[in-house]
Amino acid sequence: MTREPMSEHELEATLSDVGERLAYPRPTRLADAVRARLREPRPGRWWDMLRSPRRAFVPVFATLVVLALAVLVALPDARAAATEFLRLRGIVIFQAPAIATPSATAVPRATFAGALVTLDEARRTADFTVRAPTDPSLGAPDQVYRGKSPNGAHDVITLVYISRAGIPVSREAGVSVLVGEFRGRIDETLFAKVAAAGTRIEDVTVSGDKGFWIEGEPHLFFYRDEAGNVWNETLRLAGNTLLWEQDGVTHRLEAQVTREEALRIAATFR
Amino acid sequence: MERSRNGDQNAYAELVTRYQAIAARTAYVITGTAADAEDVAQDAFVKAYYALDRFRTGAPFRPWLLRIVANEAINRRKAAGRRPTVGLSVVEDRASGDTALSPEASALAHERRELVLDALRRMREEDRLVIAYRYFFELSEVEMADALGVARGTVKSRLSRAIARLRTLMEGEGRHDA
Image (cartoon, rainbow over all chains, first blue to last red):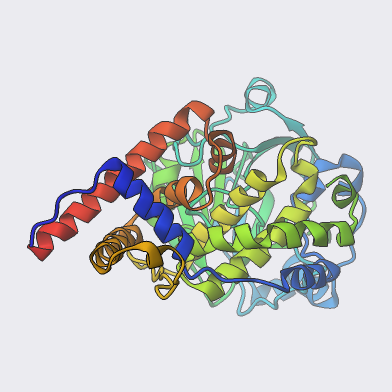
């Protein structure tokens, strides 16, 4: 059987016809369901802390679970249980037997206060060469923050991509993509990560430089000051993350994408 | 709207009631299942509530909301491991339009709907969405631009590209039948 292609008018009429007949859901009590969810405590969004320099320094009460874990990481004696085994400029990664999941109230907090700036301002003023992904599917970042590392010595630039098609908003970061960049000294540890059994860490190469891909169970991400103390309020869970160094600048790209996709995005940093 | 921005959840519930149908329909066009669509609509309304402070006062709420719904629906489909086709279905036994048609015309209309529906099921979500906004929900060009997050001048070309792809999928099916 051969079919004549439909005329433009016939196709449009058929589309309207289909549109009228689709078996759409008919929600009736959506308002009640939404209202009930709005009454629940809102999951923390750590980057909100970046917006207000004042609030960023308010101490946050962590749950006992998180405190216990922070102590485990901070105390040299307890560190036997969590062994340092990977290092990039300014970042150290510990392996722990297990990570207790912090409760929602304690989860995500940022450490440094940041000023909302434009990408151009960040590029002009940061103490290193700021790069950003040029991948068209990401486009320009929705927000750019310029803050200081916990020891006050380095600028830290954070690029926030709130929601991008094809990249789920991560439960841990609360956004589709987060990029962090700073230039740390090779011998200092500003940021730390704790990975447990369910987290896979792989060596990768980004533009010829060393990096790590962290995937699987969320890992803990936090900051340490010069004395090596963990800032409790900085503990948060992080999802899939690519870490790499480029010209002395440490980059971290956090997004719920595959390793290949993360490497592809990383290669577009200019 | 203004009351919702100030955190009045009752006022927001009114907005939900007003826009729940279009939100669920939009989600359905992308997910293809009613249950997923309702979940997506619910999530989108919760997200929209918390994002109200980023909403420009005076801007129309509907396209802004649809943008959140569509993004949520597309992300959910991709996160769930996307299948290439969706299970969109139509309710066939509606008496209304067909009563005036002869049996032959009615059969032809049915055949055309099936042909179009089958192509729609196999389309990229983004293309299906453009077609739905225009032909199912009859959004204006201005509203479509806002809902799709594109420049107004881009809407026409997006739509014609989506229609061209729809035709390609339909023709592919036609050859297959022959």
